[in-house]
Amino acid sequence: MRKATLVIWALIVFLVPGWTQQSSVHPVTGRQYAGAMGVQGAPWLVRPEREQEEEPDKALDELKIANGSTAADIGAGVGYMSWRLAERVGPAGKVYANDVQPQMLDLLRKNMEQRHISNVVPVLGELDDPKLPQGRMDLVLMVDVYHEFTNPQAMLRHIRDSLKPDGRMVLLEYRAEDPKVPIMPLHKMTVEQVRSEIEPEGFRLTQVIESLPRQHILIFTRKPS
Image (tube, rainbow, N blue to C red; front, side, top):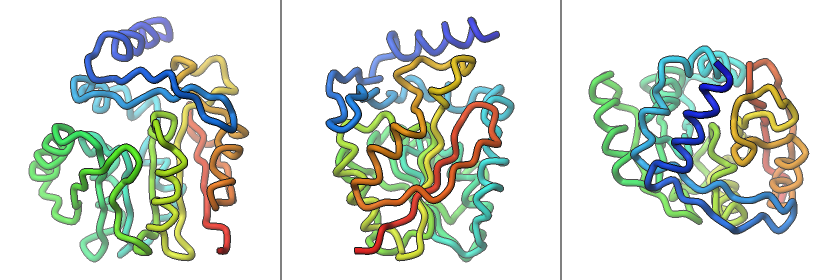
């Protein structure tokens, strides 16, 4: 199973048009940016085995999201996490579902309509700006997304501006510390890598949760200005 997963992942990364390969590296850690997956890879986001591999509902349960919250799903793709967030924030809450690809947002809209979800707002972002309202977010979620940013420092500054003073930014990233996690190294990160890159941009790592099969849950809050 592990070998098959690696083969599928390699095919998506290297053969699917639109998964941008970048030569740029992060100035702090030297990590190579992975680049964003194109819309042709959308089926990967809703593969049936994803629930067992990633346990997305358990991940959100760990965050104890309050009813009525305002949340953002950065790199939302087809909305796999957005509709789960929408259920948790409830009708009084709102989810801003961000992506840089209009085609992904078209698929997301269709998925929300099919699920009769009306509290998800699609947002077309840019590679250096998620285009979120300033000071409104209780939670900004990035699931297997941060490592793809090609301008992470600018993105983080905008995300920080979007958070409420007590808001949280949460990353889920495949564990690079664990060689058994069957994901290509370019798409995995260590806790230390994440901390080293994000804390200089005005954040503090406040909690690391390791209850998922393959991913870190990394919770950041804003450092006081």
